Image (cartoon, rainbow, N blue to C red):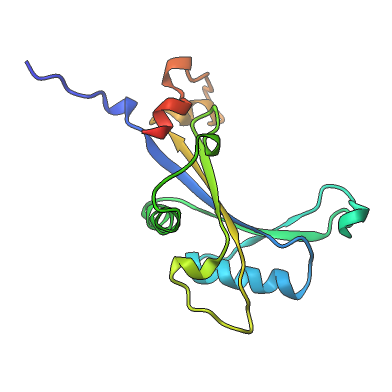
Length: 160
């Protein structure tokens, strides 16, 4: 007899979040948004500072970062570009206990985007959320239930 793999145990990429933290609002933030739009083809969202940090010159509720969430096949292609820059090698500390992982790149031009002197060079962070089919059970409005401990993605499973 052949043993079939359970389709509910198959790990998939739920979403990829690409973030550029500029640290200030204004012109640099809008240029970073243009970089994300060129990379993903989606319009990015800005993030605000949670509290004031006087030594960094950041005020509360000031827009300091921009990010975009990508799902589906486009997420896989953008993740592939990011991992190619990292030469497909990640460190142990890049993986979280929940089975997600993240990494950063220092220059966006390594992804294949042409350099534009008016925009400049930005680094960005990639964060990948992994899940199994059936995770919606814990997120839906009606008949919500818990996902079992053995069905959650672990750190070791994410490394594979």
